[in-house]
Length: 394
Image 1 (spheres, helix red, strand yellow):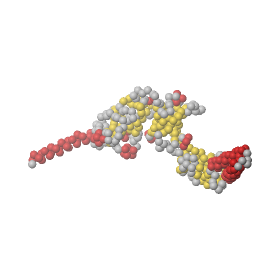
Image 2 (cartoon, rainbow, N blue to C red):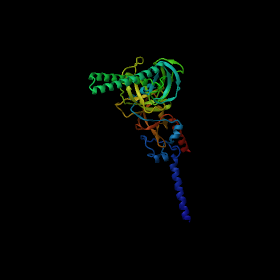
Image 3 (cartoon, rainbow, N blue to C red):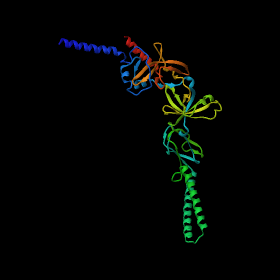
Image 4 (cartoon, rainbow, N blue to C red):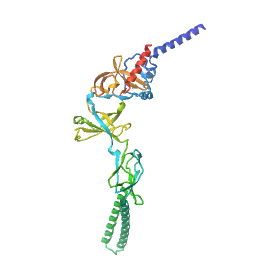
């Protein structure tokens, strides 16, 4: 009995000792900092065992907590500072994402169905315009239809007489020509009435949106008399945006359609983009060229918003350097480190830095291109790591 009791005590003691030796990284990386090598972002579970046990320099933090703390990440960009083109730009609605609705005829606005900021669908009526030209268009269409009916009857009659060898062929051909002209006139009258969206009763013209989007400008006023061609409404699709960035002519010559770019937003958020086109002429005042960028997803972008753009020309030689925001690099125990995103937290990783400029800094070694590192809020991770070290000291 005593032998069995002693053996159980030894087993329990060994288990407690194992917990004490391995407990340094259980809570928020509570271990003495030691540099760790980084890898590119991996799928959940690849580092599951490592994250679960809290390696040295590891800060345990799930995605929800990171968002709540305002921590933002960015992929490490390959290439040094010299390879990047920094430019200022603004968000604009793409050409195919904006429509201007004008009055197709003179008349009075008798109804407005949408207001500023409202969502609009393709083909939806925005307003009704009472116009005498609407009645004229309907009358022309009706007259053209009547002429077609008469021409068809005349042609049918001449066809019967020609088949009976009563009339000459030239009479039949003349009737056929008259019918063709009448049908062409009817198509023209129908097209004119359709383009102006004439109502069935011939009293009003409908102002219809050709795209889906939101009403961004409304100059129409109920009861106002407007002339043909007057701007009444502007419609813009918030999902069809582009970024226009101004660059020097020497930089524009380095850029090609399809090159990648990064759009920097307020608060540290970034959006990837692609160079869609480059203006062939310089702006008359600023003497700069304009790069038109297509963002990947228009979320958090608003037309008229000012942004900073970083363009990376394709085909540039690389010396192995990479760039990240300066705020990503923190000093821990005299070492320059970045916090690399892991499935369950952030790993403090020592890096060798190079030159810095414009809020960016070069990374000579330490992390691979594409690794996700904390940018905004990296100092919070450093503070968490400090708490862990203090806890380890006690």
